[in-house]
Structure formats: structure tokens, C-alpha cells
Length: 289
Image (cartoon, rainbow, N blue to C red; front, side, top):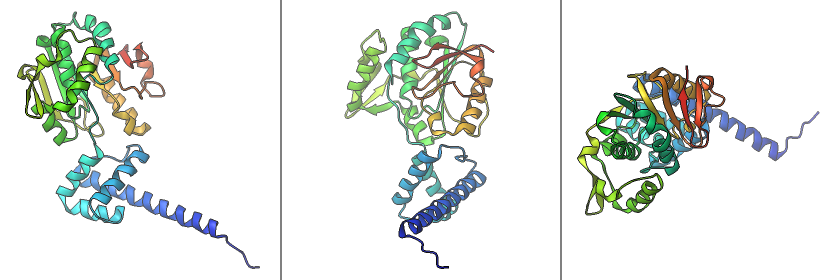
């Protein structure tokens, strides 16, 4: 008996085969990177990871994920360019101003009772939110007894953060954010304009420590009163997300504060029961056990 296979069905088989092949290629690429370079992207959310990798493939003028693997595993510079693509920085000063306003109004009074304050900005990108926190603590009279640890896996982003130099064209939006976040002074007091950039005042860096740290592979390195990690875990799958929440739970002191991004939540994680929500809208939680 002859079996007639439609063109549509053949196209579906081809498409399915191509996707299966691509999934295998992607798995091998990520495994190779982890074993050779120690960077673990294997538990990043697949859709966004796939898009970024294909964007990088086109920029490197190669034809497939396998061809990219050949290049990445034999060319350290290519791998470093790939890391920059996979960790695209997205941030701004006082991003989501209501978060900083809620922090100023509801968390700062708690911090006033502490003899010393440790804050961890995990996945700090180019540092805008770190400088925002330094400004907020300065205005509340808490900066002198605070230490801010700002970490990221992207060394180029950290280099920008350490300089504290940002484009002057961003200042209009940053000033608006600062005012909405409850700023008490003129935002321009905190930087000096020079050519097409602004340089934030050196005193803001005095109590900031910038360092490389990979949430996917590295361990806890201190105990903190506050951890900021906003819109970083949206790029992780459930396995990695729970791993990072475990890291934060281990790193927070009793009654420590965890601040997540607008698209993130403690719900459906293994650690949700260990926290109480202080502000469900702004995603501010307190560790209870």
C-alpha cells in the first residue's frame, strides 16, 4: 500500500528535526563553555538565551551553533565577546522609582537601628542602581556606616560601574526618577558634567566594593542586611532560580531584606515560606527564618 505524505507534514518533520538538532548543538555549546571556561549558562531560560546566541552568531558571521562552538572553544576573545552578548546590561538610576521610595520610607527606619549595614547589589550591571543606593543612604545619614557590595559576572559592565561615568543624555530621565523616588536635594549636586558625560562625585564610591560574582556558580561571600537583585532571575529557569534563592537565603541575616524586580516573586520558589512580604507591589521581602 502506498502512503502519501503531504508537503505540510514533510515541512513539519524537517522543522522538528532542525529544532532537535539545534537543541543538541545548544546543549553541547553550553556544556563546552562550562567545562572549559567555568561559566554556566545551562540553566538560563531557553527562549531568551536562544535569541541572544543567534544574535551573536550573526555578529560573528558564522552559520550555525556548531560553527560558533568551534570558534568559542578555540578563541578566548570570541568567548569573552559572547559573555557580553549573553549578559546585556539593562539598568538606570533609581529604576522603578517607587521601589526606592518604598525602601526609603519603610526599610530605612529599620536600618537606622543597625550599628553597621551591609548591602549586596547582585547583578549590578553598570552600577546605576548602586550609585542610587549610595545617594539614598547619604541623604538618610546612613552612608558612613554602610558598605555596598556590587557584583556582576560581566567584567566590562563592572569597569563602567567603577568609573562612575555615564552619558549626559540620560540625566533628564535619571533626575525625574530621583525626584519620584523621594530625593531630598538637587540631583545635579551628585555629579559633574564634562563634555557629553557626567562623573559622579568620588565620595559616592567610598563605601562601594565592585567585584566579579557569578550567581550561577559562585557561593555566598558575606552576611548581608539587604540584598537587591532586580530583574536578573527572569533570565533563569526554575532550577537556577531556586539555586540563587538558596544563595540569597544563606547570605541574608535574620530579618534581612530581599528586593526583587517587578517581574519576579518569591511565589513558587522553594524559599517562599521563609519570607514575609513587606511590600507585595514593590517586591520587598523580609527573611523570617
